[in-house]
Image (cartoon, rainbow over all chains, first blue to last red; front, top):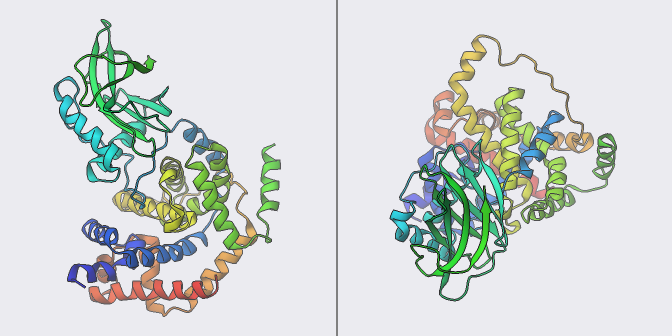
Amino acid sequence: MSHLEHQAHTLLAAYVLDAVDRDERAAVDAHLAECADCRADAAALRETVADLAEADAEAPPRAMRDAVLGRVAQTPQLPPTVSQAPSSAPARRRPRRTAWLVAAAAVAVTGIGAAWGALGGDSASRTLERDVIAVASAPDAHTMELALGDSHLVMSDRMDEVAVMGHAAPMPAHGMEYQLWFVLQDGSYMAGPTFVPDDDGDVMTLADLHDETIMGFTVTEEPMGGSEAPTGDMVAEVSL
Amino acid sequence: MADERRRLHVVRDGAASSPHDRSRALDSLLTRAGRGDEQAFADLYDAAAGAVYGVALRVLRSPALAEEVAQDVLVEVWQHAARFDPATGSARAWIVTMAHRRAIDRVRSEQAHADRLRRHGHLFEASAPEPDDIVDVSYRAWRAERVRDGLSRLSDKQREALELAFTKGYTHTELARSLGVPLGTAKARVRDGLMKLRDLWEESP
C-alpha cells in the first residue's frame, strides 16, 4: 500500500463524517475510484453515520413539504452516470465560461458533446453536468419540454445559457448527431452544439445564449460534426 | 385530506415494519423517483424529510437555516435520484449523508456570520414554525435509544471527538487543535469511535 493509499484509508472515517479538507477529500475520492475494498468500507461507515444522523430526526416545518414538492415539480432531473458518489455542491456554482460558443466554436462543442455520449463519467462530462445543474438551478431558470424522448430545455437569462437534459432520447441515424439551433429574431438560425444520447438514451448539452435575442430553438439531425446551417430533419422545436 | 394522509402515514410506519424493511422501501422510492415518479418522491419526502431536517438542525441549530438547507438537499435528491445505485449503499445513507455534508458546508461558510449573530443573541431565538407530524415517534425513539446506547460504549474521548466532527463540522485538523492532541490522535479517535459504532450496529441492526 502506497503512502497515499494508506493515508486515504486512514481518512475514511473522517471522510464519511465530512471532517476532511478539500485536498484530503480529493485524495480519498481518487483512492475510492480504484479500491473496491475501501468503497465497501466507506459504504458501511456511511450507514453508521446515517444511524447517528437519524437519531436526530426532527419534524420539519409543515410548509416545507409543499415548498419542496413545488420546487421538485419544476426541477429537471439529471441522467444517471457511472459515478456513484453524490456529486459535490453544484447548485450555487457559476459555470465556468468556456468556449461553448456556438458559431465560433462548433468543433470544440462537438468534441464535448461526443465525450458525454461516449464516456459518461469523465471529467469533461462532470464539468458539463455541473454547469447544466447550475443553469437548471438558476433563480430565473425556465424549463420547456423538448420532444426528444423525455427531455427538457432549460434557459436562464441571468446566466445567459441554455441547457438540454433528458432521457429516453432515440438515437439519431447512423453517422448523424443531434444539433441544437437558435432561432434568431430575423428568422435565421445560429448553430449550437451537437450531442448524441449515451447508451441509456440520456442526453445533456449546454450552450451560451451569447446575448442574442432568441425566438426559439430547434433540434435537427446533422452529419457527425454538425453543420453551419440546418440541413437535416427537424426533430424537435421550442418557441419562446 | 392532508390530515388523513398523515394519519395513514403514521399507521403505515408503525412499529410493525422493521428498520430493514424501511430501508429497503426507501431504496425503492428513490429508484422510482429517479425515473421521474413525483408520487414516489412525495412518499420519500414523508419517509426521509425528518432525518434530513433533523441532521441539518443538529448541525446548524437555526431552524430557518436548517429548513433552507433541508429544502435544497431534498431538491438535490430529486435531481440526482437517477444516480442512486442500491448496490453501493442504502438510499437512507445516501440521502442522510448528503444532508450532513450540505449542512457542514453551510456551517463552514456561515461560521463567521453565525458568530456575529450569536453575539447578538439572534441565532437561538425561537422561530416556531408549525412542525409537521410525520416523524414516527416510536421509530425515532428506538433510533435515539440505539444511538445513545452505542455512544455510551465509546470512550469519553472517542465520543467527544466524534461529536465534534459530526455536529460541528470540525475537520480532524481543527479537532486536534481544539482538543490539544496530536493530529494522529485526533484521527484515531474519530476512526476508532465510528468503527466501533459500525461494529456494534452491524451485529445488532
